Length: 123
Image (cartoon, rainbow, N blue to C red):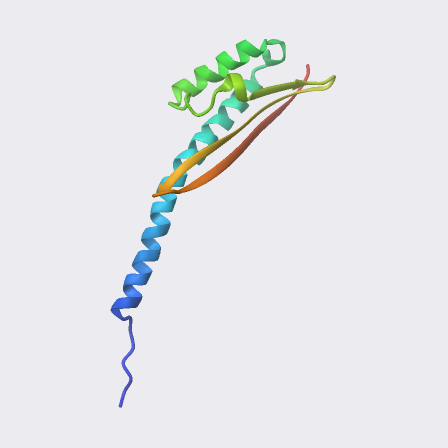
């Protein structure tokens, strides 16, 4: 007798469940990563400005906030608390470190930690 081959209903359901799980996980975790990408691009845009090394901290925060407002990302992080500016003799470093908690299901959450850093040479 020939043996039957193919997928059973249980294998189809388990594969569908696995695909659904990863699709939902992707849909929950993609927006924070996309917002972080916008924040990194805003930092790089401000860093490309030739006058950034002469700006005050408040002016840099205003510039970043304006760029993030246009990208609908101005509520990602509190720039007044998270923005760190370090100056040395040869360079200026702007960095933003923050965490995002994403609720997944019931009492299960994902903690995402982001660290953005841009270094500019002093002119």
